[in-house]
Structures are given as structure tokens and as C-alpha cells.
Image 1 (cartoon, helix red, strand yellow):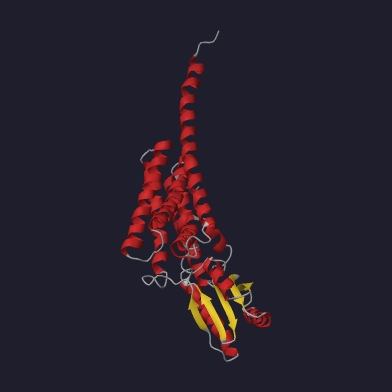
Image 2 (tube, rainbow, N blue to C red; image 1 turned 90 degrees about the vertical axis):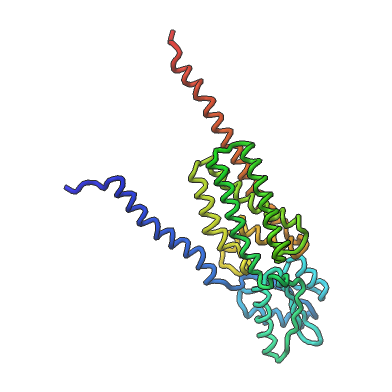
Length: 334
């Protein structure tokens, strides 16, 4: 009669099966949105005389599901919408031909896509499109590659800070203080590299440092907070979510509306996506549309730090209750 597998054999089988499953999951999380990148309800403005604007809308509607059209009465209103991050660009119908307003600072990929899409439509009627970059990406980072590359290091810094606090045994207010101070220093260091040295981030220096610091705190707080409640597995859970879903679904390389759903939406609920969106808003658009991502990061940070304090309080309560239980059990009866 065959003997049952030993504990070591079961662990070997589990690892053998688990590794390819994790690899497949990681490949899906990273490759799926990359392979399905395309505009989906991408906000785009149209301005000009009613009849001509309606014709442009009809032409753009041929790209089924690609654009979410917003109508504006004139160029000034359309330009304001681009600068406020309400739309990624706007098509202006003028007597001299169509004109396209873009914002490469919001997404160089989207700006290029809009140029191609509008140029194709104009070519049908033999017109040429003039493009105006209303909010241009910085000359040091015209393709947004550096901003995209900053998402992962900030997440890694947050994970490292949370893990160090957890494994060093810091708890309660001391852990919270270390996490806040470490994240603040991460923000200062990141702003020093991205702004002062590389020049790929513009805008107010301290505001950018605050964004980077908040991004790191959102991750570090979540790591330390879940670990305070669940123990060591909490570190792995948060790290897995941030790395497998937060990073590839952030939309930093293109835009959230360029990712398949629900990746685009979920990505903005996670710290990497929220930090990328907030960085663009603060760095290039004077804080326009910054409320949503700022609140997302703030909630992650607040819930994480709150979990750190709660986990510490629960452990203290359990430790203080143990001696009293022992004394009652040992007390003589009668």
C-alpha cells in the first residue's frame, strides 16, 4: 500500500505548482493591458459652428467607443477644458480648416493618437490639420518615459519602508512616526532627482515632493498596517497587489482610458495609478483634477496608519489580558 506523501513532498508539489501559476498571473497582469491598449471613451472636445461640429462628431463616432465627445462653444472654452484636464484634446472647426489642441503633458501617447485619428478624418475631405500643444511635456522628458519610470521606484520605496518597520518590531505611534518621516524623506529625494537634477518634473518643487512622499506613504502605510493586523503575510499581500496590479494598471505609460476595463478603473484606485495621475496634475497642470487621486492616496495612507495603531492596540490588549486570565485560573476555589 503506497504511503502518504510526507510534509516535504507536499511542500515541493505546492511550490512546483504555485510558481507557474504566479508566473502566469504576472504575465497576464502585465501583458494583457499592453496587448489591448486602445482608446476607450477617451474625453475629446469639439468646438466650432454647430453644423460643422456635428459633422466632426459624426466622423469621430466611426471610431466606435473610442471617444467621449464634449461640445464647446469656442476655442477659449475648449482650451480651458484641456488645461483643466477635462479632455485630452479638442478639435476646432475653423474657416481655415480643422485645428487640434492637444496636451502632451497629460499623455504623449494620447496626443500622438489624437493627431493620427484627426488627420485621418481630415484627409478624407482633403484638409490638413494644424496641431497646437496647449500643455507641452517638458523638453527633458517629451515622451513621458521618466514619469512612467518613477512609478515603480516610489512603490518599491514604500514597500521597503513598510517591511523594515514591520520586521524591526516597531509598533504603534513609533511605527507611524517612522513611516511618515521616511516617506517625507523619500519625497524630498525623489523631487531632488526628478526636478533639480533631471528636470523631467516641473511645477512647484515642494508640491511635487509632497506628492512623491504621499505616494510612498500610501504604500508603506498599507504594508505595515496589514502586517500589524495579519502578521508577516500582510507584507506579501500588499506587495503582490501593488506589483501585479498597481504598476501595470497605473496608466502611467499612456492613460487610464487606454487600458481595458476594469484595469483602467482599478489602476486609479491603487497607489501607483493615483500617484502617476496626481504627479501629472501637480507638475504640469497647476493642480487641475488633482482632488481625486490625492484623496485616493490619502485614504490609503490614513487606513494603513490607522491599521498600524489598531494592530498595536489589539496586541497590547491581548498581552495585558493574558496575566489576568492566568491568575483567575490559578486562584483557589472555595
